[in-house]
Length: 386
Image 1 (cartoon, one colour):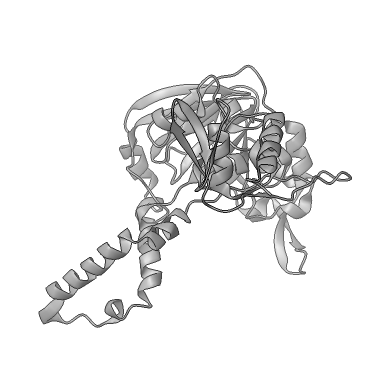
Image 2 (cartoon, helix red, strand yellow; image 1 turned 90 degrees about the vertical axis):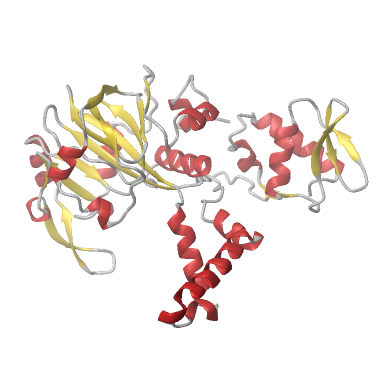
């Protein structure tokens, strides 16, 4: 079931399935909507900023004309909750810089409000990825960042005002967080970005997706702009190398000295060992664990307390089968027909083994609470769930 701040609402009428097949990791996507989605507002931003203990020179930054403003220019000395010194942004100084055209950047905000947290968990669950969120505000006609590419997929949600984006033709192939990519000079970027591919103006309620590696820059075109960007990072092949390295400590073969006369033979032994290891089910399970597991979005509901006790599947020998023009819920000894259209819901429950009603409702299957409750009760009565 999609909620107000579900990712699927921002890309309508495109479906999530079509987004993954046609755009994810491949090309940019722009969805324009006249409806304000409420992910963040000026009022909401001010509410966050007024919680001064959230902010430091690391989490609140100012940029002007593509240069970082020194923290000493907008911060004052303070102490954190442990009594350690830190530079704390001072509201009058921050607003002075903003009035002079500086752009405000808030880092790591994914958990700081209910709508942000909802979107963050939604993206994690949809793409099995690590997600971090930053907020940007800009004044008209003053650029905060020069042309650059990002090391992660970029999900841009325009919340207030307008911002014009320039997307360039050239794309860096699969950049990662490594000096090879993140220490390139601005001269390199200017020569490498190529000609303008597309110019887009995002308005409140608009969404822009940029796969990692696309060169871009942006500029507030009219009134002050406010947008939130979620950086989405999936596991890569080098993460598998890291798993093999950690395991290798326990294998004498990988700890042995290399001997010049026998390097070719030793490399062959290593290749055979690693090739075999990559095929083993327990290692493949480790690789799958690199993807963020499904997280339940469970906001506080005080003073009411929601029941979060999970349903549990009785055993692991249940499956969904298809024969005789009908889907069946089958076990080793019996089977029962599944009502038309409910087979994916049953598969979802069986796959998770242990699942709460809230997790069912927040699944990407776009099913109402009432339908999930009815199905769960039916499975309880059948003895499939407990």
